[in-house]
Length: 248
Image (cartoon, rainbow, N blue to C red):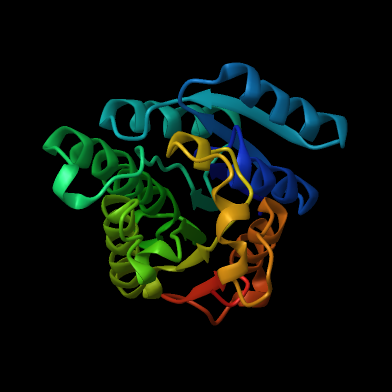
């Protein structure tokens, strides 16, 4: 069976690292992006330069029509999906809950929660033996924030990732008998551009002393965990999580 993967938010950071590693593991890679077409094209070019196969797909995962179009494009280009990494997510500038308005909270939940649900739904429709599929695996990218709460900074983001974890557990049980495994990865303080979106590009360096391993992590370290969970080596693992957080 051909190995076909879609990775959302794959134009940078953890998503881009997952895309490159998936290609090295023999996957044909769908590289989803929302806005930065040049960054997505760079990820595709890097995969092709190593002899892999990839293409970029623009879609805002918070929009149902975009998600349906994206999965249809994968069907046409590669065939039935065998793996999904729900990686795309957003955060807003650091603030306390008593400063947040509804628009901010809804933006975060639409991208991080609704988007993950919609992509998981489309993946299950293709992978599940109940729908005539041949099985597959899903990895949902959570965060240690789901456990720690991100007080004073991103409680809305932390709450969205806790919702993704609940979805991971429930969906894993729902489709376990249909040939699909669903697991999660909880990155900790990782050097990515995402911290700039929150208004503090140097956040990892500020907080790394709070990490037992005394350093920030790198996207490749998170990608290794995600690809292991997709692999046959994790064949008896579903509804579980790997923390990639240096002990924090």
